Image (cartoon, rainbow, N blue to C red):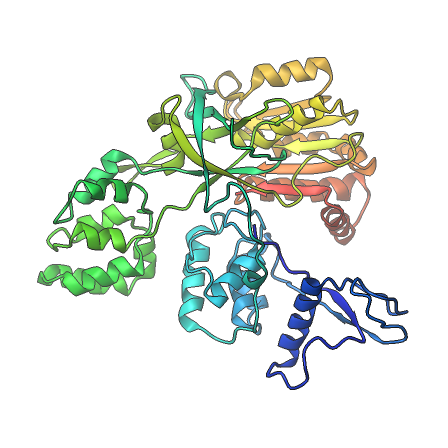
Length: 522
């Protein structure tokens, strides 16, 4: 996986970029830092000492090169982030359009994904899953506008990955996909187990599993029903295509083929309204232009390949050697009088039978894992399927006989039907591995109660755990839950730490800096 370049280097008395080189000051500074890292020169003190390369820099003045990214804050709205990057080069504007979570769902980090797009190393603008259509739309706009791109880029420093990767997944067999929710539940959540035997794949708790799914056969048949010159091979090709978004290539294909007056006018109007196009999937689009004949080959070519779906791993290899477990919520909903299905969730829940292979790879996390000190307290907030990584955290701590206290906040709709992993969690609680278990089932009483409410109720003790060196973890929905939890955390620090608003912000920021406030949100 690509790793972010270290943009903070001390280059003492060493000129890595010739003065005659055609770069401006910003480009020269960036390249100096980049090549310093590539050649093994590490940070050097201003007092002067031989670097890793053995260069004599004694008595030389040190130059610190540091680039700030003020937009790299997932609490900021996209328009605020873009404003902060308004006077930066294109690659930084592209970075500001990302969701700022560094979650790795794109296969990069926010910075390296932006730089790969800017240099042309990456052409797929839809990889930022947390940013969704909002990010993809902005990226598309920025790429069209073009602009200054500093020389070099993170993609130039990409490490060569070995073993099974996003581009070389492992064909793993499904062990089982069993329903966790009750029959009366509004949800269908699955516990999925996958066999990694023979792969040699290693993962750490907190990592994610990337999985390649295929489209529902019924949807593929509907799509091909709007094409001409359909061959048997097109079903397989269409099953791996991303049909959730109408691409520019698909629109251009129809612009070149549409002839019916009504459809010509409809397409012209549609092209002028990006918001309307963003609300359509490919089948919606084909249904709008059913009088236009386009070959299956042409439509398949105009669509990108499906991106892999990432799921937080819900197991520890120490507890389950050669296996990886997931917690998957099946997604189905009605829109425009059609039933829509989540590609990967329904793939795992409905279409893959026991023993059938699925292509997978491990996506490493970025600091989202159990504390390195086994005696450090751990607070976990994971409502719904956000429980997944914390099942792995607790399995890991049990396997390591870790002495640190563990506290879980879990929530969902109803205790009788939606208490995921209830038997296991209650056993861990009784055995003392899980010292505190606080639940919030929003629909079990008239007044809705959520995990952030339970946090506030236990605010004094929660703050004491943080003061004693505890780490705070959150997993789940980024748009609402994670923001509400973050707000509650600030309020708890302010109230029980007797701090001002600004001091509470500084306290929480310090937790993040120390990697004691970690989030896996989507």
